[in-house]
Length: 327
Ligand SMILES: [Zn+2]
Image 1 (cartoon, rainbow, N blue to C red):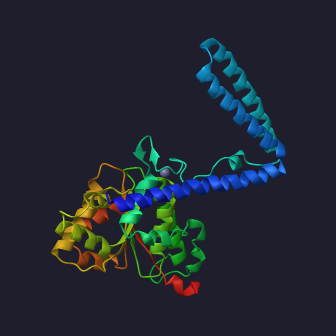
Image 2 (image 1 turned 60 degrees about the vertical axis):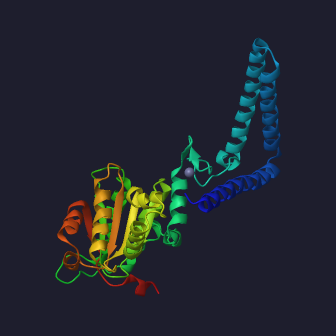
Image 3 (image 1 turned 120 degrees about the vertical axis):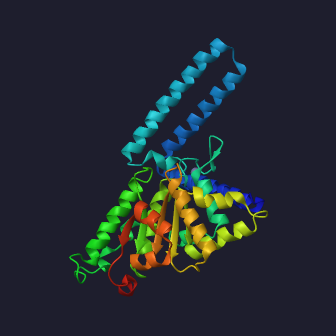
């Protein structure tokens, strides 16, 4: 692993942690000045807790037992009083606790000596150009305005773009909820530009990041460039980086169809898609393309096409470019 990256990630956790504690101090200061009794209670609790620790070091066993028990009782009474005050004043007790970005590892990056998923995600963001994910970090289902899609039926169909996107949104939410199930298929988003494919992909990515999943977002050309570069420069390359393409919980391959296609690229593309399908882990892939299914079939070899048709839920995005309406 690149030591510079490790160093950057570690300092990232230092910053997160100190922010959680300095924010806590600010909240405490405000609450204590409004309700001075709370400050007294917290100070008394700290004093008793310290006495308890000290007694364990100096007292005889029997003596220590009753003394510690007495201190614990005092602390319990104080805690009850504190909770009652908070309840009365309508303050969430969590306000007096540090708020970490990651509850699993409390912004340390590790859980039981193992790297937390948030650490793995930071590693992905640093090592790949995963910056697109950051740009999309505000995309969420609440901001997804389906009213931008027309309610007029599409020619020769009995469905409107609005009904269609509502259905795709429903499939996307099911995808998130059933992510760990092996029965859940992957997603294939097909349709013209500006129909919300990338937006929806990033809504899904953000929901899964919140659930502690790792996400790698790459356009097809950059993903293939990376893989080929790895293959050509194997000796100097980082094998962990390469394996992440096959291990990451969610891989989003955007813009499939714009990459330059030769034999090598075709083989690698099939490799990525197929290896992720046969993985024993419940990992998933979202592929997004401007090609319609016919053009997709024409461009790629039958093996790849059949893997996709069989293992992906095909979502056709219909209608007109909604970005024009947004302006
Ligand atoms: Zn974490």
